[in-house]
Image 1 (tube, rainbow, N blue to C red):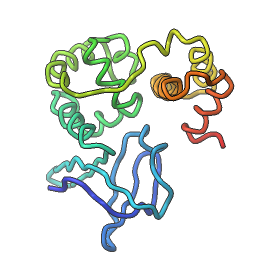
Image 2 (spheres, helix red, strand yellow):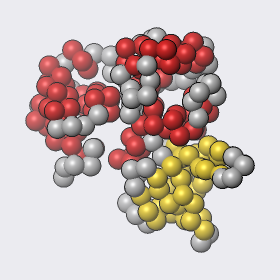
Image 3 (cartoon, rainbow, N blue to C red):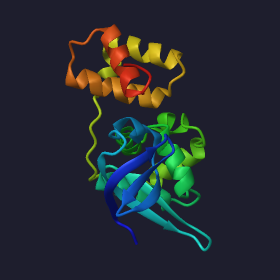
Image 4 (cartoon, rainbow, N blue to C red):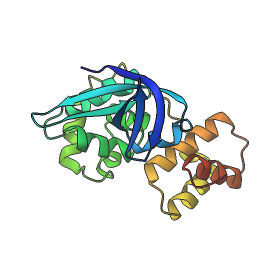
Length: 197
């Protein structure tokens, strides 16, 4: 069982990366929000690994922090949600936002994710709420009330980006510097989404 990999990034795509460990390249599937946090090709990288076994294959899923990996393990323990579906779900959101929705029993947010209806969102909350209570998350509560943030979010969503991911990026930007203008927030968002300089 592989717990983590610590090597050099030799290939990165939105769906997966390849990390070199002593001359062996490991393909590791990642949540899409992690793509913007990856270092340059050739850089050292450590990922915590969820090692999934099946009779005919072994698949590696990678996360920046151990708490993300542990939450992923909880997520795929829910009946009807395997690793591939679990990865698709959190790829539409972010780690913090997903957990916060479960803690707050936010069925509206969870149901907005592709592949999650009202029934599944209730199941996620029922099976995971008690298990995620001790997991710390960092989401700015009042970002939606910030006019500049709201305008930046609407602009980026209008360009076709995923609403949950955009909201989290802008929330984080506002938390770091509340003096940013709407245009600066949009530029920051584009940069983090990999579409700007």
